Image 1 (cartoon, rainbow, N blue to C red):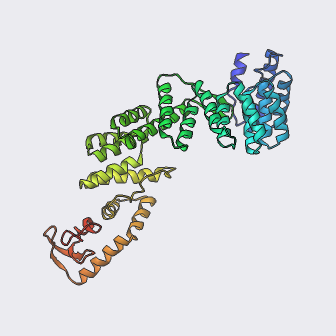
Image 2: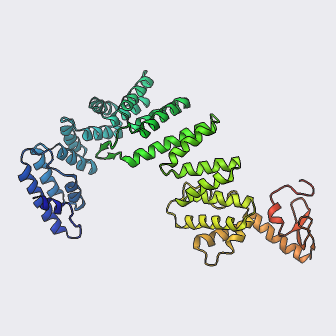
Image 3: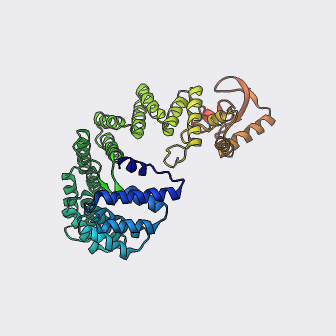
Length: 426
């Protein structure tokens, strides 16, 4: 029998008829082997398979067969089917049947349904039912319910239900309570609960793999949530407490879990402090994970020390990464900010086979006011044959005027166009 079961879990979706035959065989095997002890009769994979094949008749047949044999899972999945098809009357019927057997998934989904319907009374009822069964998601949702309510003791009850979930070491509850304190102008308490969450996570004292069938909190979720809290703690120490050592400590905790944001933030901190060795170290760590902002930051640094080779290297690396990226909405720099546009133009003009993105970037640069003014001045002073000794580099070249009227050569102009005139200080 076990070989048949294994075969059924490895069905190929390219042959619908064979799939349905195997599925039916699998269902019958389960009925024969388990009989009336059928809480395990219904399996999620079978539901998904039938659903993907849009075969409601077959799915409904086996679900109802399982329900008659006492399967709570089947009650939930039939309710879930009607939830997705928006037949809410039938959905509620099956969810409530499962809820009567203390099925937390159905209870939680009923609370979500009544939230969407803005039925506060029924939403609260089902959340309280979930709290009685010690479900931390229901505790957190009930806390949010009270936070948005008009009840006199809303603050007390908001904290109460978050704290109940925290007693279960539920990391999400630490985060939500911390953010509640932040919204209520108590950032110190926010950091207090964030630190408790980080400590519980570090010492493996937290609730793992909390599962609702439609809300799965796995280790990736927990790690990402803790990283988010680590970053908030580090920023708090850096910007509010001016405690550099503790800020670095929490950033390093986050980096130990591959937080690109922590690498970038530490690189930026050391850039401001003038520690170029540590700055490069953290930016390069982030660049190894393809962080575009860190590429731009290193390019900006090399621009400041007039290292054109490395400026070009990291600037073009960033542009190529943008060109290949699917989502760049969170970028801090688009390739123009903090750069000398004349140097950028020079770099882009050296690209032999530019991508469409790079070619468009160059064309847009040529349309900027500063570049147009520069080109017009070159044309005008070429006609005037204004080839004289430059007062900056002392070389005899074409000179054009700065905004104040003083002149410099076309090589020095890109370094001075947006700065104070070295001659008159205007």
